[in-house]
Amino acid sequence: MIVTNMSRANDEANQLDQLYKEIILEHYKSPHNKGTINNPDASVWDNNPLCGDEITITAKINKGVISDVRVDPKGCSISVASASMLTDTVKGQTVVEAKKWIKIIKDMMHSDLQVSDDELGDLESLKGVANFPVRIKCALLSWMTLLKLLENHKGGQ
Ligand code: ZN
Image (cartoon, rainbow, N blue to C red; front, top):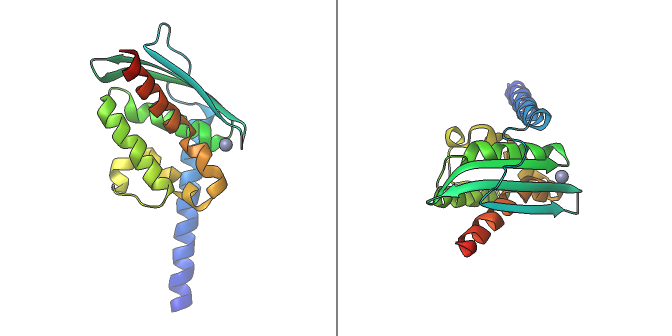
């Protein structure tokens, strides 16, 4: 009986992993909001030399609202997918809200998540990355680059 329950749980875990993989690959194959904005209010390039990931983020920020954000990510599936999900998450949000999300993703990579899966949406698929310390920087690259962009923009005003 116990064995049966265990194997069912394992099957469910595998299916979940498969779903996560599919979500990550979908974003990787066609990242949302890909490209660069002409005449952006803020622009930052950064990289993760450990993996070879690179990203440029450009944004339009008006009165504390990120009205547009575009990413030009190059690298592994996790870094590209995370950047794509970032644009879905912060586009149209306030700078304050975006910073809240940056903290949520950082906490998630330290398995210290404070929000429900419902609120995470596709970002839930990155939860498993916390189990692979070498990939955490891949998942966080775009978010840390966005933080830099938001800090730079505040300084430039
Ligand atoms: Zn990577």
